[in-house]
Length: 101
Figure 1 (cartoon, one colour):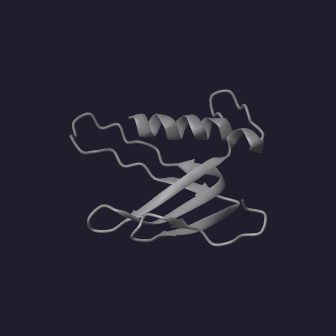
Figure 2 (cartoon, helix red, strand yellow):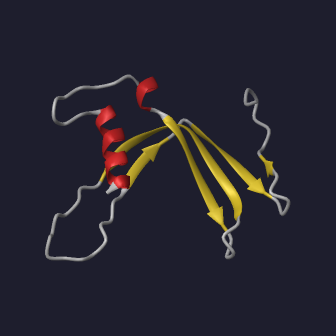
Figure 3 (tube, one colour):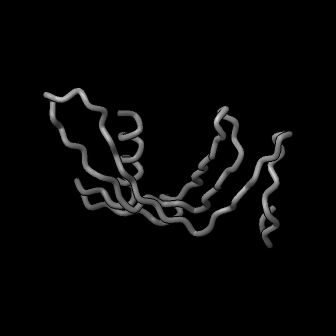
């Protein structure tokens, strides 16, 4: 439920279906980090998505007779992303992008 509540709160910043309230882009964007792990669980690649905003989330089917885990699908969009490869010494080597420190 914590993941659902976080995604729903973020989506409500974009457009709150209860009161119709909207926010500016600066208030609804964030940085999204996705890590790719090897078989041992070590991070080997990282994608950092900058200025990410949520576009939508799937609804939950409230079936109280089922013990299944809820599955939620979310859609995001980002202005740009940075692909970082992590070597055996755990040093992050991002590509050089103009204007990125």
